[in-house]
Image (cartoon, rainbow, N blue to C red; front, side, top):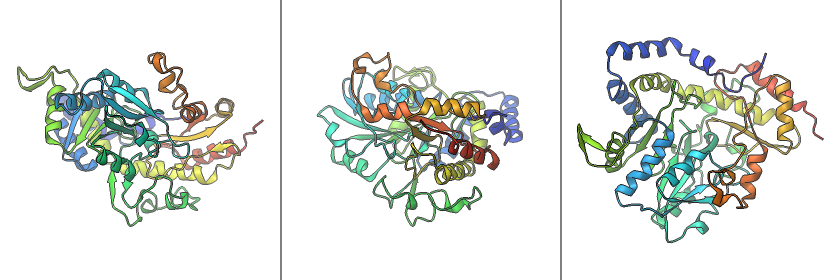
Length: 402
């Protein structure tokens, strides 16, 4: 039997009764947009993330786009300004910038952590730079104290793409993303049944804040495959800025501040009641589900011994994706498929090599290109059994490189 990469049916079944009850409540209530379910989820999610405001929108791309659009309306950014962004990210991050007629400035990641290299950001700043957009790729915190300091000194907005990192924590006592592994993820635990409080950014004697609360504003995606996934599209913006929050809420509702009064040229981007009700159920179990993902990922990190495979340093992560790098990636993927293990590549083509951005196609970004040519994502989700995890490790360790 195939070990699926992400069996959404099994994951949904873990809380099926509550989800069905929540959906039935919305259906029977007869109110399907901008109602109590959305208000309740927005309140709970803002409380969970640690921000004053949460605005539900239609999807994660809209969340990113609306943040930038609102800052343009506020006069903080104007057409042609530059936004620094990691070169290795999902295309949505870049699309939100170019849709607003802003200029993405691609910065290479660190090969050890697969996140934007904070030592390269400052040299990418020009007089037209107005923001840094960090991406918590794979579920790992990309924020560093250095990035915060750069933004403060250069008066730059810090925007978070938190589409893949619901529940990830940044431990403020860490000044570097390159801390030794044994200070990051409870090394030496060979059991999948390690206690939760030893796994999840706990016991570190430092102040923890969640991604989505670390910058000026953050975008979240609730695509079904995310750690906090809806049963369709959904997204949100979190922020402590009341002016930004009110403006985003207005622009996302056709530009209307009250019915039939339009202060801005807006769009239709709303989180519907059904998705909000489902998300509110799943939010209660998010930390528990993330801990299970952490257990599995740490077991992989401690037990995969295959030569030629690089397992990135992964502190402060909820493992939306469990990535590994392998020069024989395609051969390894075929081998795993033949042995009943489904994997995915995140992502086969980097943004600067996509046909939609021909102006970048000749750019040389070697670290990004290496990641995209070698990355392979292993099954890592809360519905996996211990036996499935152990089977993945055994099969990988039996692979023979040439």
